[in-house]
Figure (cartoon, rainbow, N blue to C red):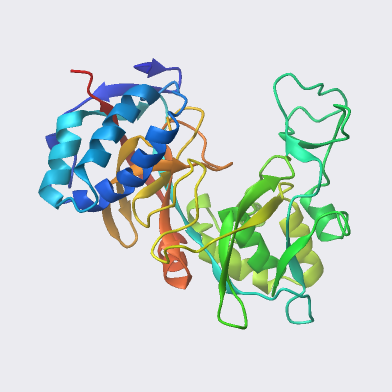
Length: 364
């Protein structure tokens, strides 16, 4: 673990320096960490520059598993205080920033119709992540996924606008169909969804691959066009209302500005209280799972988040269990709020300054 990066410093503090630490529900945080603990034992995560060390984190995971599932709040708090040390992440410039994400829950059909015309696609054959040793000649340097022809030659996947226009018809299998491009776009941005089928079943789709083109926040268009006066006003609910109010051709053009396109796979809904399996290989826990910059923060690390949200103060111990294209930087996080409309209402307006404190395993 590095104590300092060009973009941030790690400053040791005491648990008593964390606002709301004593009042937090440590049992809820411990339950989320227990999901990570099982994964840590199975596969030690790669240590990142801001840490913590993956092997040390795995040792604490074993201790958490030994405590069992039903740990009371006082014991959970004692576990974190005994086995971790808090280090505040201090960005060299600017302030920390937090957003919210959720798992949409929408009606869907397995066959297209006039009411359900927009497909959610499985990855087309040959699409894979670009590796360090690949020959990138003739490819955009920003591209992260591409088609392989079986001989090691790579070719770019179409961008969102072309895929929406049918560029992969017959090549990418539709998993299900939803009502609108806006609905599909939000599913893409969140990377997962629960789909309500006519027979009452719930189907989950979750991230499988992407086009590999750079992510662009369509909310920026609202600022560029004067719909809102600042990025802070370009919340998810405002973006949805704006997109739905556009003429169809203008809406398609706006959505196409985000060249990144997400492909999905089917996944089970084993526990309705939990979200989809995240990038760290564990199910997301509402209010306790945090998406981080995976190039800087080791997956499964506990992180205490302080923010003043529209819904009130948010001082919670969370676990780094996911990532995202827009989550860039050492003091940047995305809070998972759960599934469905209630979770969207909570997540949609979160675009706030925040402070992050990394809990690092004690070595003594």
